[in-house]
Length: 304
Image (cartoon, rainbow, N blue to C red):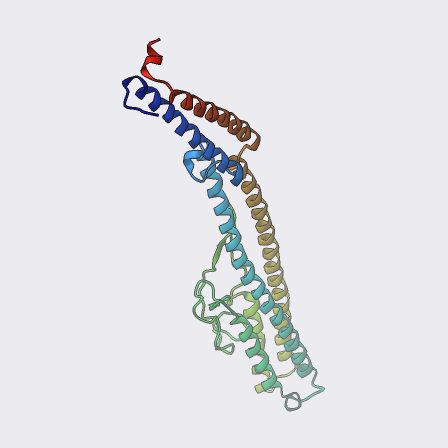
């Protein structure tokens, strides 16, 4: 089409502009239908940008809580295994003290002192449990072990204290969601551990001093009190594991729900887009026909 005539220059420009606009719309609709989403940027989500960004932010938040809770669960389960082992060690300490108290077997035959010290050291080893380089029972002082000497001198013989404890007096805190925080439920200065090592020290002192059955009975009562506290402590850890697991499941459900809503906001209305695509194709075809007709016109045709 020749455009050097004043008569058809404006018509050419308008027709060409219309064709370009329809072609652009067609390309956008075809992309929406093939990809299944309305737009790959905010400009295509007219009127729903704020809703879309809110939903995406909530999804990220839910996923972050799930990741944090996974870490918390790993630490809780590791601590639970250690407490479980200490419960078994306490049972062995009880049996050993009971045998020594009854007097049916001598201290030398039982190898009492060495056995008892080894059991106490084993309990300390379990308390020094680490995960990913962190001491779990040291409170917030995760870089140092909670106990190095289970036989540390006590302020008063037979009275439980935490003279052996070298960690922090503050527990690590976990945030499981927007509303629920919890302190790590086990720390090395827990009364259960205090009673256990007090019982050991009482039994060792009774053995070295040649004490009678009453001295060993005091140690036996103390280790039995430690056993009760250890079982209570383990129950607290297990209860916290269940709570965190339930919260994590809820976060997963929330994430899936938010993902579905986000997709509803962003996905293409295939039926509507197909109808619009067909309409624009018809318009484009008519425009090309008009363009072809215009290209054959001359000035004399406009003057008729």
